[in-house]
Length: 281
Image 1: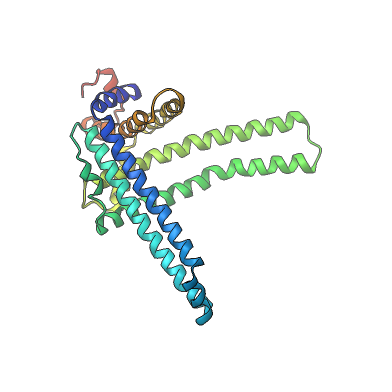
Image 2: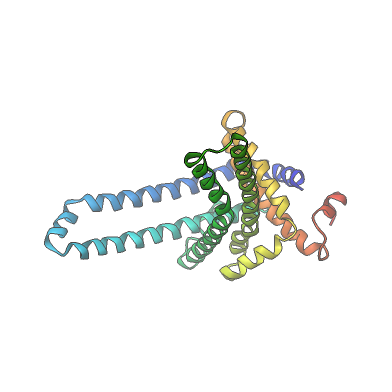
């Protein structure tokens, strides 16, 4: 499946590389620029003469409370703006993965308050879910690492025993990384459902992502891992303006492929059927 999706993505990328890279570049500049601007504004307000005079004239706790409230509101609006841009970018790649000619203006259609807030809720919920799964998966290897270091520095421990502990930690960490990537794939469909259905709720988008990714998680992890070599290659060999759109378009194509295959195939039949039939559903 991975090779088939990459071939289809390369075909869709023809004559669209610069356009998609421009979309990603503009999105990155806007997101990083607004983030830097917000941080600088918060800093300059804090060190300004007006703020210092307010501290002298009024209660310092009240002034700091109002300032903290201003910072929270500013970063909340910033994250809404970033979420809206991120969803717009995914919408362009999703349309391109279906063969449609996505226009540049679609990058900004999710910046309306209702849509950007919906995007913000989705990414926040996914981030919290992944954080909880990460704590659950990575706590055992972290506990083993702390225990191994404690035994190494506090008692006399044989080299073979210590190496065995290190091997066990590496093994547990590898398993945790694999399952964490599986969790990431389970939630990766949700943003694309959000950008294609303006009425779907955040909860329904996540539930739909979990249901429709069932049976394709292993392929998603493999595809995600294989793209690491492409990202490394753009440092010395392949220019970044090709690799970045190719990676994002491949991810979108994987979503559309699995989503279409989920409804096209009978219940329980995996993606291997598609490959055996030479791509004929």
